[in-house]
Image (cartoon, one colour):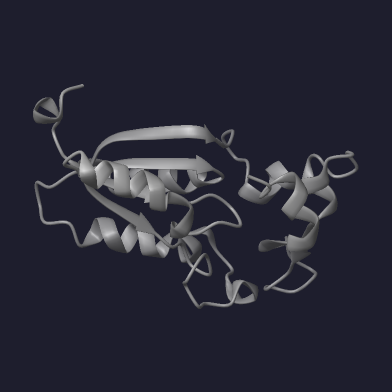
Length: 166
């Protein structure tokens, strides 16, 4: 698509799990060099965001930096949302809240939930597999052990070779 034919030239990049805005630095640079406005968001407790993930109890808390970004857009302005990994869930959530502010969404190898499924359901379904990501997961319970887990933390030393090796 030619740049001048797009409804908007503003791209918002959304990280996946265990990542932050830093993972988009090359993409954001290339987009800016081509005439786009590119903003990479650190979701709550991700990347440079200093909030402790042990205190996140809802999806809306985790996605708040993205929904705040969309809230601040002037009426009539739209963005193209781009996500990867579990970021697909967060973009879908933000689109439901701000339909009029999203021109397009691009899902790059991104997760989507079934109706009624939670983000954490996707991870717990595969427990017991031989997958390195599964073995590195630590479930956290901000609302107490009597309630569903609220966050997944990863043992970064186990992920270096399998996920962050390139």
